[in-house]
Image (tube, rainbow, N blue to C red; front, side):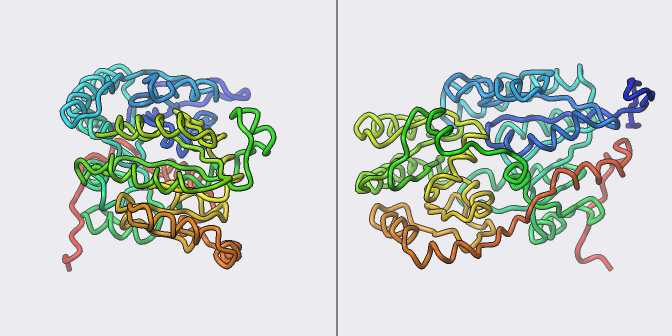
Length: 404
């Protein structure tokens, strides 16, 4: 495939030709929060033409219909690919993946991007990758090479690496792993973590403004809780969530702010347990989606984060706040010293929360370093994209570590 240049636009009195179409696909609130700054740079660029496809939980009322957040930020959504995420069974997710493959194939046929850009390891990205491969469209993959040994995301992430042609990773260890998978070192770039860009550039809400927006008052202690299904431990999500809730029920004078889980198998069990807990305890509240601004603002105001979200490892350390990381979902990821690991058992979770509030631990947080860097990933990615002829990316040669 040759690079397809189509547009000439007027910018600042000059005619800018040959703008290349970069199609960003986003399927979740968290993923969009990481991509937002990069999307803004691409949108304002005179070299690239940004296309956006919204899919997954963005289009589901049950998960907050967060495509509206994308539009409120001033972005145009060029296509919406619905996945019908009404059920949370493995069969339903397979059906959604099939719907995605059909939807993305049609979207790529109409939009004809020069490259597709995806982040992470969500199941819907498999549909994106297959459709792009069949359409001979190269893929740029962000946050590859990471490990999450307790979730199916692990296999999806590494699969996306093999589908992709450019790789932007968050740490040198992850870069080495992508190369180990046979990708050319010349196409793998350590740019740092995407989440830190948002933290450094977003004007966070103050405590009173955040309280008004959330419709609550913070208490003397405050925790932000996000727990996702552990997809490689079939049938365990309800048990693990119950253990967490039993621990949280023991806390006194503590505001507990829940954000709801991803659209993984068994997510409805967690939804129902949280709703029941919030109904029973007036110090607890739950949100389908906080939006990225309120989510980051909450991290800045609470005492720590509890659950098994990747954010607790990749973003929270930059706030110098503690994370209680429960179970195996994030096992294998690089961790800052601010992360306290706990087995998904009530007493062990309570012990970890007690440590989070320990004065010695709190003092140590002042010197925490986030292993995912200090920002600037989005600018680095755009700079690298400028240097490639996308039309010459499709034919890949396997990079063998044992070659002479």
